[in-house]
Image (tube, rainbow, N blue to C red; front, side, top):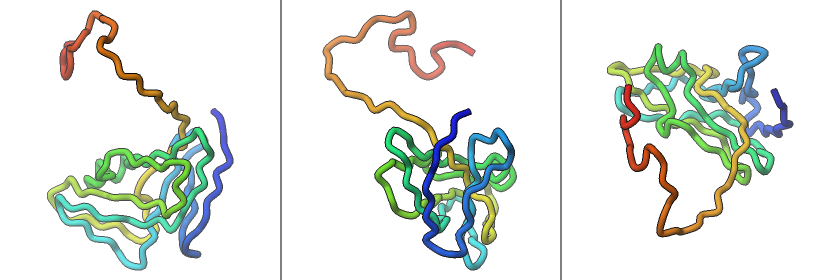
Length: 147
């Protein structure tokens, strides 16, 4: 396991710093910054504030993932499936939570709403070509490799 220093700025004194749930957790929990409960109707999306901004080091990206408990128990998950926070972004970390359930769901102030994972990435140099190398799979797409 590698570690990296991550500068976090509280944009609101009430904001809660991310925390890891266990010694080997890959994702740090992000907490809702809200004065009152946030109600999310079925099929709707709500922007949840964290009150935090981060200085992500070059070569790393902040990824926002669903919390498994929130997704399975309440049907709430990030609307964009995985949020991407680039290293040059300095604004507030916000989570767009979508309600996939058939019932209204509620997020309480300071409830854990998502996981933050810091990861390295490789930026591609795109090169246009007229041909790609052949493989056994070829152009086989969705479901083409069997069950």
